[in-house]
Figure 1 (tube, rainbow, N blue to C red):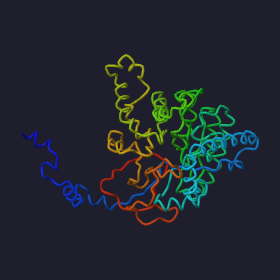
Figure 2 (cartoon, helix red, strand yellow):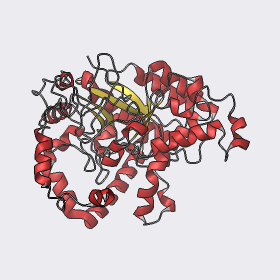
Figure 3 (cartoon, one colour):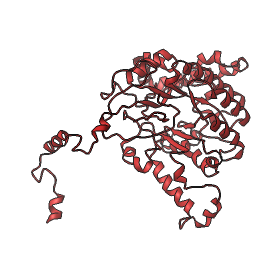
Figure 4 (cartoon, rainbow, N blue to C red):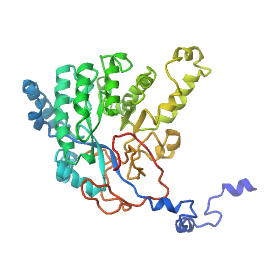
Length: 430
């Protein structure tokens, strides 16, 4: 009888669902288990995944002159691609570029950028390349941004990266306390030149990390010890290493975009296993690796399964001994200290899994807030300007405090349900 009663819906039991919701909403914070002291705390919002870049042809003065002939060829290819996109998707592209014309200037104009950030209540941001996610017309020369692994000529890879880095240094020099620019370093093409680029970036105001190619293609994989000078330089400069989603072996997928959607997350986080199980974090304990816009649903299963491998579960006992001496702790214990995830456009399901994923591992998204403590390196919501795939709010979140002047933090009140989620995006609270 009790089982039958419990199986009935609220309506069948004579309960008005609207009344139940009203009673729940009428409860005080204390009745809902909310500490009133938390509600009065202050927070700072930092975008974990913003983008910046010049209209492609405007990179010309930042590019070494000897590469200008190749650059002209690249521009012609880009324009042809844009023309094709306009034929296929004219209405959407035209609406995006006209409706957001003013805001899109924030991709390269620091004053406009600060204006947009203030309007959103964003105090600071982590800045990746490839500002134009629609037609790719604000990408670094030769595709040196999110598609850097596809470049075959090392000269062009570094030329494009340096051109963008020169622009980025200028952008971040304006309001550097609000920027964490991510420099481009195509490490798989030339380790020595990569180290030089890292050292050049290290002391520039507003630079907060580097991005390496997501895929190394025909080059040495990231588990190769030849990359140790790169990891050492990043550790010494305290520059976290990032990958960002975008690249995948599209040549294998033909026209089937579903394959790309199914696999792109894998390619984005694949370098983690190469660094971890080759002992890179043992040799360089201060090295930090961040996967951005690669979701985070996979983190919990990865930590569980890798710990099982390391412990020699019944399916891996014959191989567990081969890992002896490489790691000093469980694989899961490197998450939150060396390994972090910028979970842009985080889903509700991933938020539900936050404790198994690790609140010290994943950034949060969709306008949620982050409690900061003085001296912490932390990051949060993806404003992702300008990116049609981001979660930039259409208006200021109602729980924000007064708009902050440029260079100052934005303050507001924390909803009691919000938990502290730490990441490593090289922004430090004043």
